Structures are given as structure tokens and as C-alpha cells.
Length: 294
Image (cartoon, rainbow, N blue to C red; front, side, top):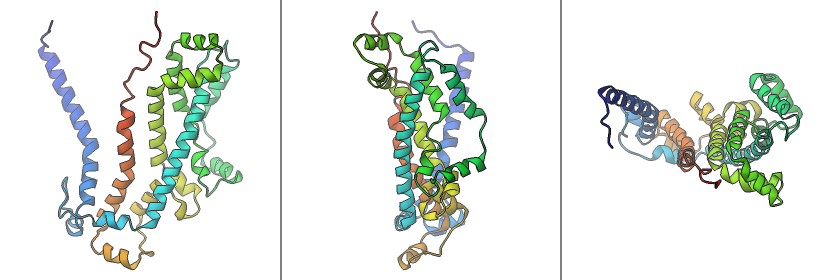
């Protein structure tokens, strides 16, 4: 039976949709402007004539970006960082969240271990002790300095831990009856059933690794080893034209500083924009539903 919505319900839904549409536009329009700016020619971009549509469409900015070896090298360093950092982080997160999801009677000192991780979210040693620790371990100016210090995100551990607690215990008990151990239970039962939570944690990790820029400036002594976000930060703050080749100088005559920066920003954001839709579909998918039969 269809129930006709009341006037107050219609007003609420109209206000709700209006607010969500406005919020969505606030998120999308800046990226649309950056994209339009990157495809515009030098004159209109310099004069501030570009809005949400390119003016005098050209690919000169992208051609110039792709001739800069430092940008391509920074992109490659970031790809390595994301692949390596995400793999290590997800492995450690799984190995930490699984035992912490058990009851205290099944895992001795579980509460103490949990508070040990929570403590690190409330207090930290500070920037200087962190730098000295990384320096004394010999990681400065290496890719590992960007990966190891932040490998364990306690927030992600808590997310996965709570998801593990919501899984039916009967599945693990059935695994034990069949002769499996805890590692078998983790990799054969918990990990496959936790795809929604793991997809969320993976997305958080990938975005965090891709967008992190400060540690690159802090831990890399040479600009040639900067990840992409650190490189873009230096480009946006200050432009270095001391190492421009003759071919690049010819292209630079057709490219403005604004279009050049816009092209780099959009290329830097494009991989995340491509990955996000594939992980988004797992957020609302209930894999556990129907896994236990009465």
C-alpha cells in the first residue's frame, strides 16, 4: 500500500536534496574549473577568463608536463610508494585486527595490547623525535622512509577489528572442527568475508599515501626523490625554470603558469579518481548476509 507523504515530509526531502546537491557541486566544481583551466590557452588563463569550460582549447599544458622528467619520476615514486605502502599496511592491519577482535579469554593481555595502540592515537613523541628515529635507522632519503613509519594506522585497525567482531563466530568454530587453525580462519574466512571493510581501509590507505606531501619534504634530502604530492607542493609554491631545455622553452611560450599547474594537479588526482569507483561498490555490499544457515 502506497502512503502519500505529508507536506512536512515533502519539505524535508526537498531541503535534503537541495543541500546534498549543493554539497556535491562544492566538491565537483573546483575540479571542473581546474580541468577547464588546464585545457585553456595561455591568454585567457592569464586574464582570468576561464570558468567551467575551456577557452581556446589546447593540449599544450599536458604536452609540457609530459616533457618534464622530474614530474614523471615523482609520479613513479608515488606509484611505488602506494603499492608498497598499501600492501604492507593492509597485511599489518589484518594481522593486528584479527587477534584484537578476540575475547580476553581467548587472547591473554588483549586489553593491554589494544590500549597500547589506542595510546599512540592520543600521544606522540613529536616531529623531532620521529625524524631522529627515522634518521638513526638509516631510512632518510629512501623509499622506506615514506612507507614504514606510517605502516600501521590505528584508525584502520579499529575499523577492521569492529568488523571482525560482527562476523558470526560459528564460521570460525566450523573451521576449527574441520582441523583449521587461526591463520586458516583468518585467510580462508575472515579476509574473504571482510571485503567491504578491507575495501574501505584500502581506499583510506591509498588516498593517504598518494596525497601525503609533508613527509617527502622532511625525509627526502634531494628534490629528485620527492613523491608526487611533495613535488606538486614545491611547484605550486614556487616555480623553478632553471633547468628548462630548448624544446621546453618553446612549449613554455604557449603555456601559462596557471595552466601548467592545473595540468599537473589534474594528472596527480586522476589515478585516485579512477580507483575510487571500483572500491566504492564494496562500501554498501553485505557479503556476510546469509553466510550462516539456521
